[in-house]
Length: 144
Image (cartoon, rainbow, N blue to C red; front, side, top):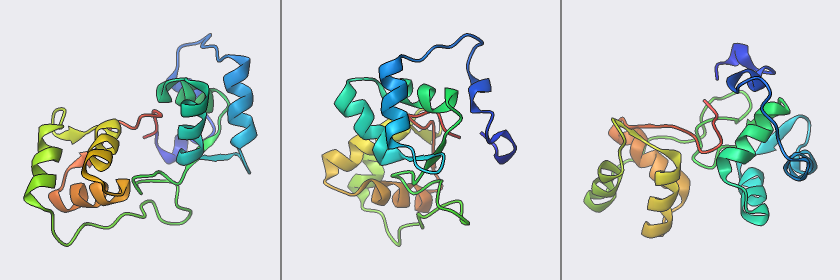
């Protein structure tokens, strides 16, 4: 969502969208100064067995900001991105990225899988995407 939508994240969801109390409490427990890190959201998902999309919905319904994207794309205070384009991209990594594209974009979940499979940091996969001029979207949590 755009900057002007900050604090209105719940509007992305149909009226009456409900979040379980367990998930609500888990999100609130990991929230600090109305922000929750992507890594904390991943932990909630992993520990509670909830899909990342459900965690993202809970975050939205509570109007909490997602900070410190693990791909380096958003939530880094004054700058919008922490990731910088890679100086070079191996042919294998480029092939893996291109094989996972949906349309002309690489889904966040696919970037995570490529990183795990290739034994790379998630931000390194995103840096390769930046160099290749490939947008990483959609976010597993529903951001941007």
